[in-house]
Length: 160
Ligand code: PNS
Image 1 (spheres, rainbow, N blue to C red):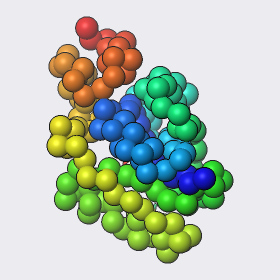
Image 2: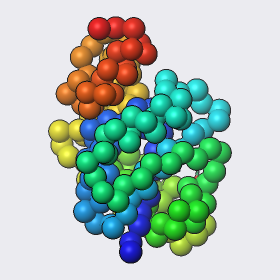
Image 3: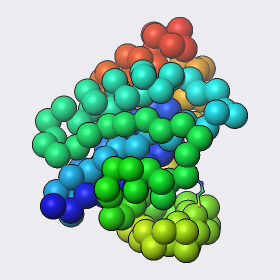
Image 4: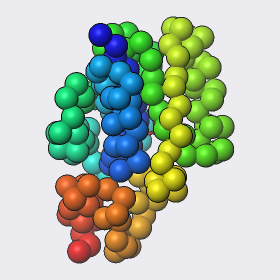
């Protein structure tokens, strides 16, 4: 049985994230989607809301579970869940510059390897923060999130 972790803030999950989770599931028997909560950052959605939205998004996938972790190292999340690797999407050079030090550090800390999956070009410019900004001012983000997330964004940000 092989298991990996797909970590992130997922505030909220985008179709880009979902694509990475699906592709990770093609590579591993089990995927743990780890919602990491930074106690110093207030998100748009609570940890419980993020988990519920992700669970709805991955409903059709066997072997995918969703968990939240607060103020913990990702390598400890890997230990706790028994995952042998981290899988993340890479949208471009900016992601690479941000991700590389963490990947090197995680390997140094616990021998955990990080696998980078190149983003589907359709989602290469999509981030949760950009979508929140567009949705906040009434823009349509429904192409980049599931209907459940689009509805949650509309409800939370008060636009229709
Ligand atoms: O979706 P994000 O915000 O880009 O995800 C970043 C995240 C949560 C994966 C990263 O910040 C992380 O791994 N945080 C856990 C704390 C940790 O292990 N920090 C040291 C990394 S070397």
